[in-house]
Length: 382
Image (cartoon, rainbow, N blue to C red; front, side, top):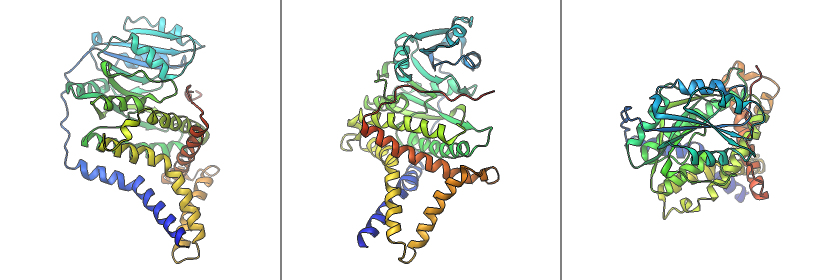
């Protein structure tokens, strides 16, 4: 039984560090650093790159909303990266009637990262801002992003996700809770030194710091890591908000998470130097704590459950086992009974289990050599 206790307490400590210990460390260290907000009068020429595949339903509205943002009209261009669209996306963009809007047609669909690589070669802006076709920006988002580039040490700036869930689904409520947690971590990381990942639908990079990436790598994680590797900082601008609707179903969320995590794992392996603590001490600690260990969390949860089952007759271990089993049963119950509509906190267990299941499946996909190049936007039926 001694081995089971070692496995149980080791797994428990690892999980505590992943979810509470590391964020607490960041929070405490960030108390010693106060952020000085940069003035918003800086307006370099920017290129907004919108990745789109079969987005005829919303691309016109996205362009109108982007052009209405508070930024000098003569200091921006918009490039719609149409990744093999088969609907009327291209026609809508070409007929938009604004000289600042340009279509970048990619005839053969090769995925979002490839589309961004192609778009950057045609972009004229000093600062590149990457967006999705379904995302709505806060009116001041562009000014707040680019203001940070007045510091020459800054190579990339991420905005902040603000999710909403009109359907009040358990997955949606879990997503909102998760991203509030993640955004706090990014705020504390940015205050201390540098962020090691950006929000995919609202992030920016200096054009001279951009690195062309393989199509099977997730750009919003790996592009900032290349910026760090080039000796520049990545800033999290929490005031630059992007509003996006959550997924509604657990199946949609699981499929999306598997794709994102698998691409993230491949991406991290493409910059192995950053995982060497003797070269990149603080950045390496962040990547191990916030990425590697987070992806390994389902393994620790399984070890915790298995060792707890072996020890269930020991004092107090029966209570621990009951708590674990209750968590998983509550998640399963949420699939059939919408308890979250009355008690919102009950939407968290299902999302938590979905996230960890996706991480476990992502590891399997990585070991099997499977690659995820394409993305499939989730569209609501009106």
